[in-house]
Length: 196
Image (tube, rainbow, N blue to C red; front, top):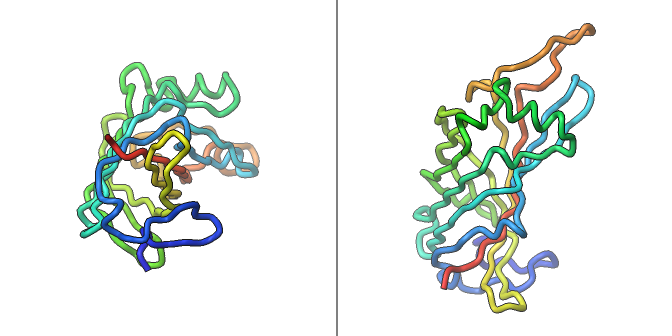
């Protein structure tokens, strides 16, 4: 079953025709989240997100493999709920936001995995280093909001090893292990509005 024709309790008004959703969309940051989870001190998770980002989608209902996605994230907008930690993440130990103000993702491939799931592979650039990233996405539905906007929604997840992008700062623990995990979980809740 195509992700464009799902209709369940979590889908408001799903499109019944795959081609009906073909078009260009702009991500709505007010109703979207780009977040991450890192293991801290080997015992707990620290969650954060980016508050300032822009992005576009092109959906091709006839041939979903021709769909594309582009996202630009302002790194100074990182937030974890702790000002000291946020400042450290912006510093030269981590994201060097003065030198590298933006993180970008540009899709290079879209795969239909069936059952309403997609995999979007692309180039993720952090600290000037570009490496491939695959994001598994679930289509959450399509609807017209009360203001007449035609929306589509996707929920996704991915994992990266931060060291592969040059994010290597860490501190050893007396009990063994390190302060910050190398593996970072990424999560995406995306609401996008069809362009006029």
